[in-house]
Length: 384
Ligand SMILES: *Cc1c(COP(=O)(O)O)cnc(C)c1O
Image (tube, rainbow, N blue to C red; front, side):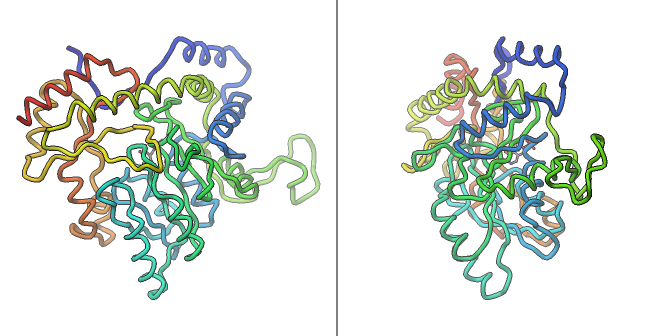
């Protein structure tokens, strides 16, 4: 039996054809497939503006730059995330702090956020940006977070790397109704892939212009935005210190093609999640709790072992059976790099307690029922 990974891309013949078409065309990068993917994705999410980039890490960095994050500023995020959600602040020379998680959703806790903001206001250390991460594909309580953003005057970047196609209060994540910016990842383990890739969405026209400029060296060519007289058709100006965060047309053609199949892929993930919920009842573990306000995109299906269960034994047992279980996430504040900045074990106890017992089971649209049954029966064997 072939090993079963925890996540895997889903590539169709149409996807392959779409990529080949670009290879035959005049544009491999900065061409029409990039704009098409941006429009397709923005349309799907219900946001007016989208900027495609080469990764979600770049997307987060770009969003922080466009929101003027810099030395002396604070960015707060969840400790239960991939390191990129925090690193984006460090790239800008800003400070990072974390907000402990809600033990039900494993998302950043709004209660903890509120409490921390109250204290920070007194200390004069309010954050400039808060990055809620829609962990596993389940959206954070964005309405409450937006409320706090208005009260304490911070900007919000949703890290929706797990949440392509998730819904919150009846609309698609990415519409930026409760945030300044939303970013997505198109890494192959995520829900929709471009190989590597990311997207930044916003409703703010000015922010959109800044994002586009910073994506490509801070260079502008549009004669309306030039500071000096246009010197000819070759002329361009650099207005800020931007980067090369561009994505290729090859990748974007794959993205647009994948997007056409997204509903089907999401439906399959939801089906698999429901099946896990049902087939794992009775075992000494917690299946993922779901809020009535949202529909998860099911990037991850995380089970939390009951207290007293040796997570390592279950994890190793599953791996020995050829099942690519994983653990999401090692709390970011416990990483040696963040400990070197002063964070300690014990700083965010809910995230640490969750981490000690969590296992991510395989979930992806190509996972067959037979493979899923194999995962489930091995888990039963190890736990009973
Ligand atoms: C995958 C991921 C990222 C980084 O995405 P890349 O596209 O690989 O740069 C950032 N945040 C979260 C929560 C992720 O899961």
